[in-house]
Length: 239
Ligand code: HPA
Image 1 (tube, rainbow, N blue to C red):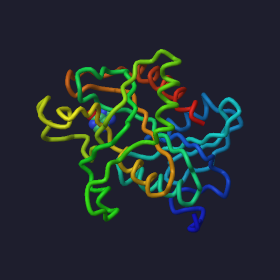
Image 2 (image 1 turned 90 degrees about the vertical axis):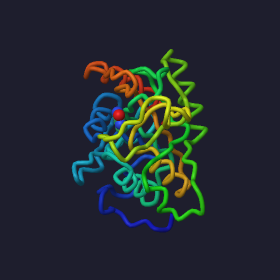
Image 3 (image 1 turned 30 degrees about the horizontal axis):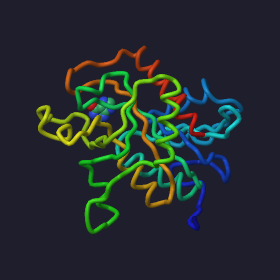
């Protein structure tokens, strides 16, 4: 892109410090965990606002990991800067989600083929209708293969990017997004997918189910760690 003014207001990296493929957890300490446990020859490229970002190598391939914060506006800022100012081509969100459907169990993995949203984020593109936020088919098919190779339980389908975590009016099962087959709720993917489309980049959201809005079941911290490791190995295969 022509508009390359770096460092940006939110990312302190210099030219070439960020890999073309980047993993994006919401929590910056998860980005540090990825760097510490999965990458070699690591350099840190960002600490602005403590939104840590790292670049290293996984199985010989250069890859980065950086936090995004929570919600569409936050991931919207970081993903825009990564795509337009740093030339990132493959942006892979790795996060958690709440299950909306009974067949989606805690600890399962969900690949967000599409992202519905109740956020106004998409409206900012000024389109004359409703935009369908979709992932990169290439990244999705490679991620599915990596999950199959590992024998992991996964689902592929629509997810919901919600602006509200503490929703005061949770819909009754069978009456809302779940009725339309939407598998799980999180808070960022619609912004990531629309920004990637706008910037000509590829994006995928990989989630592990941390809780169920149907059964009320939730994972323990230890279980979240194990499912996080599985998800990370799948995501890193995309480097
Ligand atoms: N809502 C939104 N985001 C989430 C949830 C949820 O219930 N669980 C994990 N991420």
